[in-house]
Length: 133
Image (cartoon, rainbow, N blue to C red):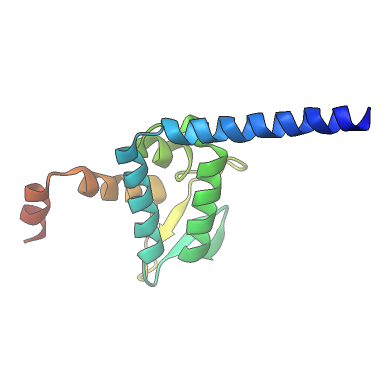
């Protein structure tokens, strides 16, 4: 009897693992790369804090948090915009928006901050050069 319960649990665990793998594979490579670029962008910010539920966090903590939340919400995330809207914009616990606090103290909603960066990522290379000159 114990062995059969163990086998049932093992089969269920494998099913969940396969389900997570399938969800992860369903995300188009280009969208996954954009999400990774957004997370890297957050991690590379200097003298910047990530504000979640009124608490200030170092960007390395924000990166770990965003990755964990993305993993938990992977079935809902089909695009980089989904990532911003469903993972990186607000607390699922409190509903409060996440903020990015710049060195000068200015706070920008992470939705706005990341959407601006995504627009840069998605713009054609010629547009990026024109905007940067």
